[in-house]
Length: 208
Image (cartoon, rainbow, N blue to C red; front, side):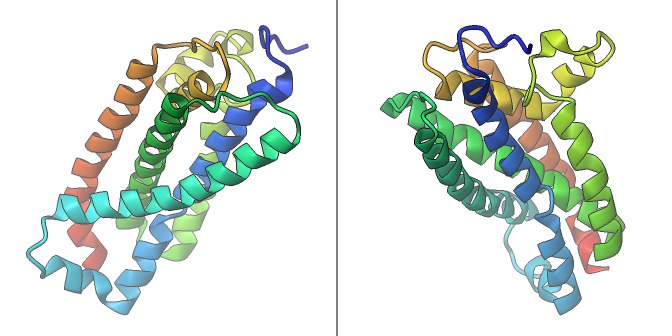
């Protein structure tokens, strides 16, 4: 029996499923950059006066639109299954912010991978290699407390854990989360900015 406190397992699992959908959509977003490189679009972007970090950041924001559409589907499905969710305006606004940050984070990570490997075949292989460890080494489907002791520090360092924790705090009535909500969002924002800075340096390699 998985300990989920005062929540049913379906309630506990709903934010984890939403985080999974955000991860799986965003982590393969970089394949679009590879296709644009093959079409010569990246070269046109690089000769424009637009700063590279804006080019990268805009890609992250565009990926968040897909994440938000997935969120709507997951929330509607959860409500149809009778899951009790917090639908207060503040919670919904926070949910949007968390999904935007999570989508931007993993899509930017995806672009970094695309900048390094440059081919669709290698990119898909690495993307598939990353998704399962990121998902299972997080709190998406079970609490950190039931994990083996050696896995808990890895889960704490996993950005997906902070996305799941933020989503649980916002979606489940009365949930306080593993960390304060501001800390979850700050970690997501900080990692996203770091990855954006890295990809801004690597972005010219996409044209080579």
